[in-house]
Length: 130
Length: 127
Image (cartoon, rainbow over all chains, first blue to last red; front, side, top):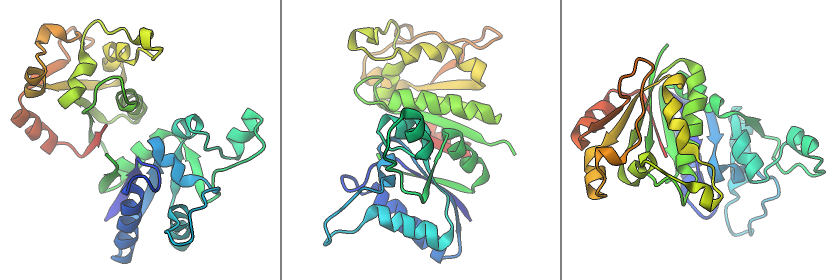
């Protein structure tokens, strides 16, 4: 089955990103396909490369990047949501004249239409968050 | 491949960004030529209240765009009757939204009718 995943909450405050990750990994391990994980609302904060959790806690961001590396998963952050929250890829940072890029390079910036397209192509769309 | 996509609004128009985001998402979806509808339940019914004036809050008057939903291919807008009653809202308290042919795009439905309509959807986006 093809899954399209939406993550609406940031890391650590809410369990949504953890649950989405565990679901995605379990689905892949069972032979299913995760066509896209789309980060929306505060969920875009799952894509900052500057997150530095304490060593005795899980690293939510690194976990996503490892999943992307292992299984070549498309991790997409909503362009409007990420601009609002200061999660900047290279293009946005350049356009805004901001020196630092905090978007981890396993993630790409995409329009919300990419999520809709995923929902059309996938067999199931799962939403994680309130 | 055409899918039936429904955008469900459960939250009040102000206080959180979800109502505005739901509208943006619906408009984004309109580019894909799918079968689109919106539903308003719980505090979401307040989004359809007439005579809103969020400018006093410095917040965008996004619900004004509801009048143009037909132009974006949103054929049906469902409002849950029970949610309206619980909040003391009558049909005349809601804004009027028309289709191009002049017919009323807003349909007040019972909770059980809405469940049946949801059952026929391919994808439900909840805000």
